[in-house]
Image (cartoon, rainbow, N blue to C red; front, side, top):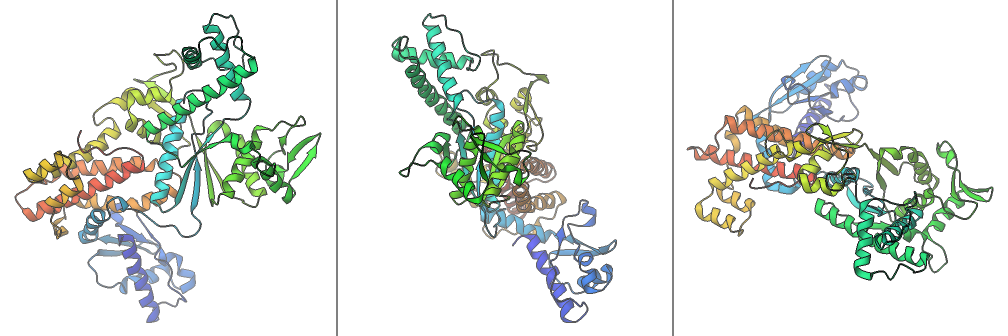
Length: 574
């Protein structure tokens, strides 16, 4: 049982006892209303229940607080209780209260700090969603890290999560992509053909064209332009989509579905597409009308600044129409809530997208997380272009130079609504100035201590890969380890920090704030390093050594969880 839950039971039990003997006149027991004081000098926990219950109990808050304190049962978790200010109940805990955290972390392992969520909790989170017309830029890397970490945090907090990548593979940009390759193809074969302004001029287009030449030679040089454009479009699309899969897999970001925009326009046996069904559902609600030959959505009825065109007078679909059909499709798949991650430049689209969900009867079902830009630096100086290509620095180049873990950490180090200043040289450092290295080193150091404590034969089995570190730890830490000797301040600091994981994860899930796990990991690593400087683990006292080994083993587990929620590895050796 978590410390908070135990204290809630104690406080609410005291309230019930005070009600039963008529010290307090309340119809029902109020919640304990526990919170952590900012200043530890005020205790480990504080209850504001006396302040909240004053009107109902017809008593001064301090009198209510005194009644609660007087009815608290004797227990080995509370060291002292003080009434402060107008009626705060400040609670200081004993070392015993925190020692249970060590046992719980080691028992639950990867499940430590998990919560459950009551009610509808099936979330679809869509992120990255880049056009398959060119390489990922660094901003896409931030969406990949942020979306992946948000999904991981939500799952640990008890939500069901479905991760989705929307492929923007329909529309004019795809034809422009095919034409871009066709132009480069002709140029490489000696033809003087200009590149239209609407096309893609990056060097990667030339690489795709050269690959087609290597495979097909000049067979397309005098082919029908439309046939050539279509062929090149599909081949270039397949190549870029494959590259997206490869890079995201390398980054450790995977999806339950890659959803193709094209499928929204495919007709079924009834001759209708998903676009048609989405618009029909709006029409049935009375939010579709015709004007000047176009089909309009009454988005102003839901707070948008103007109504939106879905089908132009010439029969062409607008970009927004795909959004309408896609989000309707998601809701029809049974999700309770939708989260979209967009770049900050898409802010203007939020209101119209919220309106479409409300029109179908799903108000509030859509939530948009906006991500700010990533500024690249090298030794404090802005980086504009790739040294290798002379063009933009791609996401893949950053990963190749910095590594997945450091890239993820830097991308997740701030809230999504803050700009990231990503210094490549800082991210590459292998010392304490690089925060991810600092945290990973704490984990690796713990693993080293556990290996040192093991017998030679157990260590040999571990080195050979025959047993895991968890199995090694069980050989050096007795099952009945006595944790009562963990009373040093630096030991208690570690245990206190581990105890906060569950509420931290729950809060990070609620606020979509995965970046808090970077701060938590760094703080926990710092407390471990302080403990390591103050307390020897391998000592002559076998009882103390076993307890401290259990403490650092629990710390290892919690570090691995917190790093894992960020999608970052927890190396056992460095």
